[in-house]
Length: 196
Image (cartoon, rainbow, N blue to C red; front, top):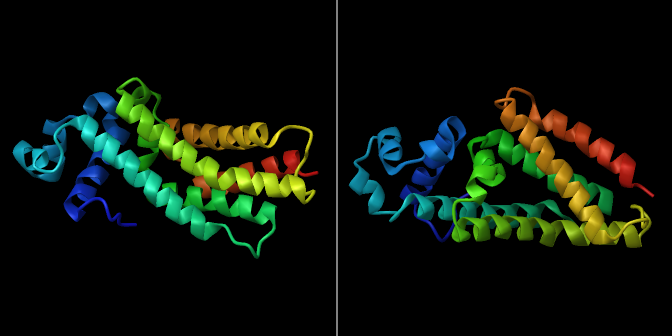
């Protein structure tokens, strides 16, 4: 899961920041709290990032890059569009089950107001997901797997919105239910709705 653009130490800081976001939200994510969580001095954090915003932007950039790599591997030319759709979302649910602290960063409405840089980084994650999901949906419609009653873009938005709602429910339930099982249930419902 390592990125070429960040150091191991920066990744540690990003993961610690994700854990603080999960427990304390955006307000709790301060350089002071981060240094305390990691057992570092604040100046040690500043050697790697010049602000809280820079940490969040790096975290989101890292997640976008990781998502791009994972979804490229999840989608196969040997699968039909429905199987590829399932692969995309099962991959996502498995990732967040393993790293729940990143859910808050990606699905936190509080982050959206923070800065243009953070908004751009969140938008990039959405674009990466669309880049992989939309061709699968389009192929599914062209091959008769999925309904053509609505446009590819609208259908993609409905699917992404369902995923976002599922992740939001998991987060406000304090990660207390099995996201992979609930994700499979959601996928079954979506596939029933969109199948031709």
